[in-house]
Image 1: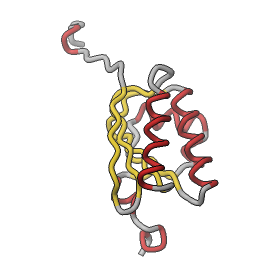
Image 2: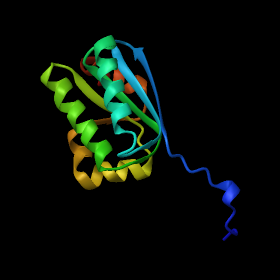
Image 3: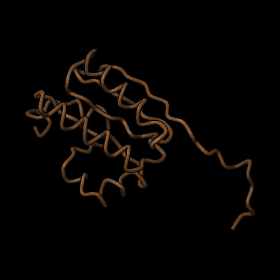
Image 4: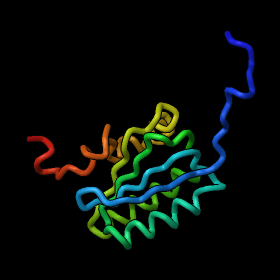
Length: 129
């Protein structure tokens, strides 16, 4: 084991959100930590993304370092809202710690999880062909 070196640690205590449109989907990229301190930022960005790009939403979790129950709650709320509006929610590339949270809560079986944004944005009818 290497000695503890505080300079090697880079605690991420904020959430960076980037929204763009890919093939008719609102893609929201999350970087950092999604917790009680940052859920309102995500909730606000999801609302704006849906207003701008519609109810087909992709959450790119590639760079999400951590997610607590508050973050899960926002994702579940978004899923309910977009599906009620005839849209969809897909998650992309959750890191192992985030994937584990989804598995423990049973959400990994209820939400669509993809490896890439392109897979998530592919039309469902042609994605299997």
